Structures are given as structure tokens and as C-alpha cells.
Length: 393
Image 1 (cartoon, rainbow, N blue to C red):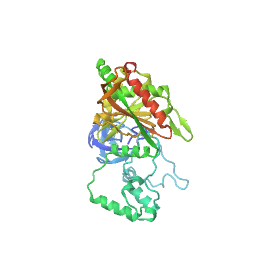
Image 2: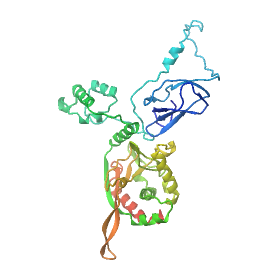
Image 3: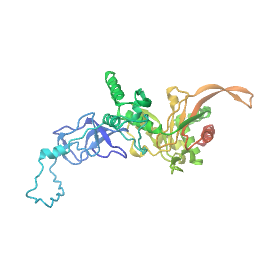
């Protein structure tokens, strides 16, 4: 199994593109695998005939696993290992072909996908104390302490005992279950790590009428999310401190304004990243944005378009929602949310009367260790000002 991307530790085999007995060329796609972020292919390292596969469909295998064997006429010389001082080459016992094959048998394990670009280490949460026996049992099942949230402990001080845990597992076994996809496991892991921080959300109404009029003049027409993303990029370029990360006792400012956009894809959410969003005009961003959205929906995002972003824009208004509290990724401090537009009466000071206006909630969820309500409010108000002048974006 090759290294399919930064921080990708394993992949699930989803399709055989070549079968035993097939003759393949060097570089030919022979397997289709799924990581927590995308579906990719594994290619043949050389020309030859496939002898056998050692892997099974829908099983996950770590990087470095031997996937199968290819018979080839080309000779690959291996550097011989040196005999020990007490053995001569003639007396050394050589392993059989079967023993060599067994050495490379894939070691199956539970799927614990890492999330590309999210270097924050995972910690167990959700239980005040766990005995070594309980920890060992949970590790055996691939569970986290957060999974104990539904268990009522019978031990001292409400502690969950091993008996409580086993009864809980036995009850689960009786219930209907569906296997979580690798993406769902990855999203759950990222959100669990995000929740280790004190998060807060503030919101204001933003007026969308000018955006809706401006987009009619462009082809292709950008969606409201791109206007908001561009406004956020400009606001953070003016002051990057709100997007800084607290590391120890210092706030590390971002080196560039790289902003992601949340895209629903199958059983989860992908976040393609637009690099240097502050240095490209709205018109320049339209084709980049559209291409990334399409690749995300097909789960074909390239590695350079994921991870290492400083903030995310989430348009939950596409689901008819007017207000939500999205959670920033572990590597980020901010996530800007956009609600559904609604016609509302807006007081016009000049006309001294109410006028109809299309309004939408703008919410900002943030790491409260880095940002306070006042700074978050100023950032939101600046974004609201910018989207009122879409021709300047």
C-alpha cells in the first residue's frame, strides 16, 4: 500500500481493476482504494502478470502492506543480509517461500483515519476516570472515552466500571447497526478534537440584495458563499490576528490567507481550500471555486487543495437553515456560517419607512481562547460592510 497523501495512514480496498492472471503494464491502475478523503487508484510498479491478491474488498490496510504479487521477467536484485558472527552463509537456515509470504500477510486493524492537514493529536474525552482494564478493553474495540457518554456509571462517584461497559456493549449488539464509512469516522474524529477547545458563536444579519444584483452581471454566476468567502479573505488580510492559533503562550499568525469551503459529499463533509484568497479577485476565484466544488463532490480533490487552511465558510442556508453553529476544524480558529436569505422589513432612515430587504444570518464560530466577542463582532461587521459593496470584492 503506497503513501497516498500526507497523514494518510491506511486505505480501504473498494475495487479490483485487474485480476490474477491478467498481464499489466508498469504504471497501470490495478486497485481502487478509498481513504478518509478521496477515492484513489494504486498502480503496478512494473510490467508483468498478476499472480495473486493478498487483500480483500472493503477491508482497510495500513501503508506498507503487501497487496499482492506480480510475476515479471525483470530481475530485481536485493542486497543480501549479513550472517551473524556465529553462523556461516552455508549453515544459515533460509526461510521458505511460504514463510516469506506469511511475513507479508496483511495485518487487519480497525479503521482510525487521520485527517489530512489536521495535526492536532487526539485525546480521550468524556470520562473522568477509567481503570486500566477498562482502557484496555476500549482500546481493543477501537473506542474513545467520548463513546462512554451514554453509559450510566455504577461505580464510586458515578465512575463507569468494566461491568457497566460490558452491559452497554451487549445491549448495542442487540440493536440495529450500520457500518460507519471512513469519511464519517474521520469527521467524527475531527469534531471530537475540535471540541477540546472552548468554542463560541456570535451572529448578525447581513443584507444580500446587492450581492444578488451583482451576480446577475457575471457569467458564470458566483454563489453567495463565494462572495462571503472573498469578504472574509479581505477582512483577514487587513487583520490576521483573529485567525491566529494559540500555541502555548503565543498566538501564531497565518502565513497566508487560505480559506476552505464546506461541501457535502456522500456521508460527510469535505473542505477544499482556496489558497491566497485575498490576492485574487472575485472574478478570478469563480472558476477555481467551481472546479474545487465539483472535485469535492466527486471525492477527487488533489492533496494540494486540502488541509492547512485558516478558516472555513459553511453555507448552511442551502439546507433551508437560517441559523447554525458550525464547528471550526482542529487546525482552525474560525468558521463563518451563512444562513438562508429571507425577505424582511428593513427600516430606511433616508425614506423614514420600512422597505423589503433580503437578509441572511452571518455567524462566526471561534476559539474563545484566541478571540473574544468584541473582536468577533468587529470581524463580522467588516464582512457585512464588504458584501454590501460586491463590486469591490
